Length: 304
Image 1 (cartoon, rainbow, N blue to C red):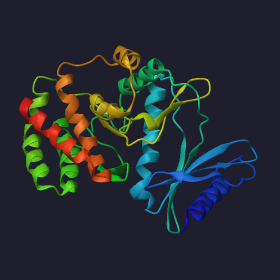
Image 2: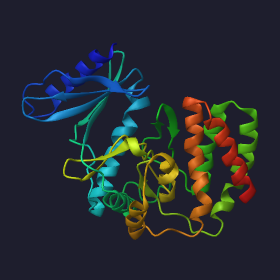
Image 3: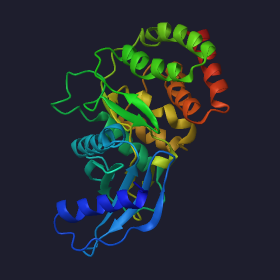
Image 4: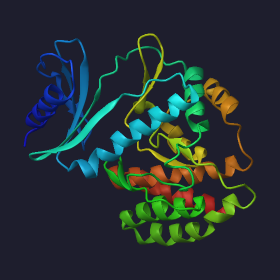
């Protein structure tokens, strides 16, 4: 099925399942998006607009976890009083030839105030897990999601270092099919618990999971907006594994750490969290990311 036809299926859902929208209008802006999903905006005569994502893969493989992640982030934001907008997700469904995700289209284009963004992310991380999540450990209720175009495994585990090894590092290492990376990465996986030896077990925080500069913005009046998550409950420090392309400045971190004080040993763990995303980029894009991953592994092993 062509992307416009999948978008039409999403428009039919909006017309039949979301009340008081009036007449659904033709999509605007034309299909755009990433290599693994396309996007369009569907307006209605009521004035409400909806952001639609479509993909050739089933909803369970692409959009179910994203929709659940948006809802989890919104719940954490509400519980903590975070000054942030999270788009409301309505449905992630299969259609002939693919799947679609429908959410509110949030007006953006405002200047991002980094202190305001840092405060919002810190408030979300500080929110206690909801009752249905508390006590389950680290992971997410949707046990398989995506990080970009890659599978992200989220099945619950009780131990955070084990989760980081088994659900994050080992799958990405295996996907490289690079014998040297896999061999050296296995040594690092064995050493991961040592990076947490002197720290208490981290409280599970609701993470965006893919927080880089392309996944946040601001409304015209400057309220931060978070979108395109790869959500799970994990160590708050892991949120910053994409900070190398997030453009966070000192004002961001000052506001964030006012909510979430920086823990002892955080400096040593930064590269551990960056490695997951560099490995994922190596698997998605190749190029210099593979050698960057090898360098991070070598550096981490020296410090283990």
